[in-house]
Image (cartoon, rainbow, N blue to C red; front, side):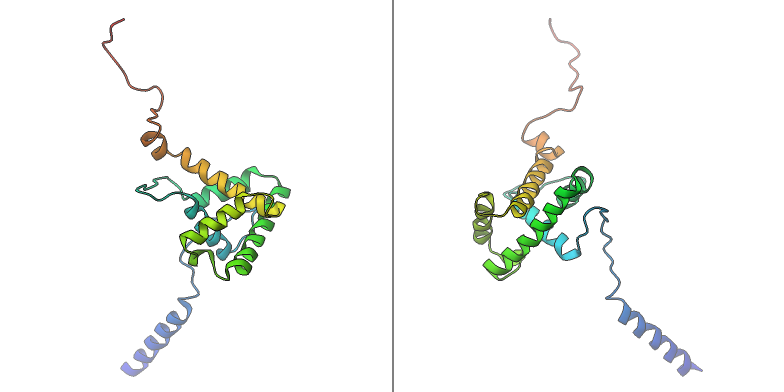
Length: 170
């Protein structure tokens, strides 16, 4: 009887181990208007992380930059602009393959800066690629400069109504 229960347990454990890698534990938000896969999302996330300076700055925001960028594109842009963005994303992937023959993650910082300089000049790139990079760059910059961390530490911003000064001479 113990052999039978041991065999059942082994079958259950082996089937669980077989199906475990196919289970995706990370739940990603689904954007209705932006049909991107995980690799493309990871590429955009790596791009947004590389665009922000990391020198002694820990960026504390309630959401990731990638979520902000994709949410704004999904909710605020027209369908034809979303198509241009996705076309630019595909061109960006092709540019990485052709020019560097590697993924964005494997590029060293010097190559990334060279790529950014190439993408910053609109005469070098197509309309879709220029739209993709400028949109991603501007939304990444907007997310950081409107974050609570940046406004309090760099701009010395105080939220309304400011501080209370009780006894002040007039």
